[in-house]
Length: 155
Image 1 (tube, rainbow, N blue to C red):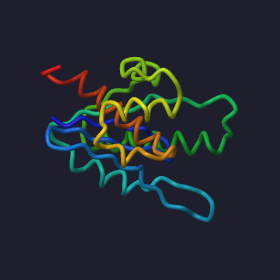
Image 2: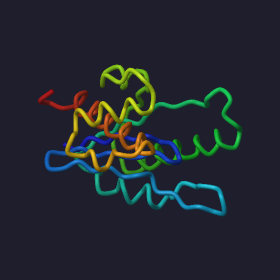
Image 3: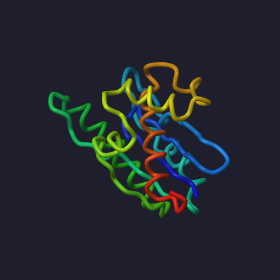
Image 4: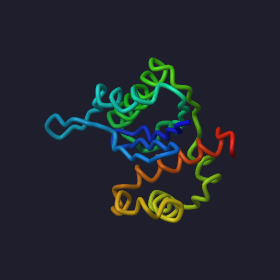
């Protein structure tokens, strides 16, 4: 079984846990001048190899207070693309609120706390989580682990 965690932001990440390995993949983007845009084909390429015997958790996100209209729209676009690709590839998925997965995984603080918990659970991945900007990878990894704990027959 493969367990997928998706942090759906434009600069989000995907983590895949299966019996033989763990993969951390930054969400593919392309840049037009100073604007980052989701690479839809890149999203598809990541997920198409996991259509069998997989389940996914995607963070249930909402517009944030104070978030500008353009950034909120871009964020929602990336979120919708992930959902569309999961549905098109028939990969079962569930939404989980940040509060729920963080509580279950022992994350008490904000972004950098996810990295700390991920370091503790997966010390062999420290080189892929070592920068502050890697908090999205840590979030995706902890969501994949949450998914594994939630749906694994072994528990």
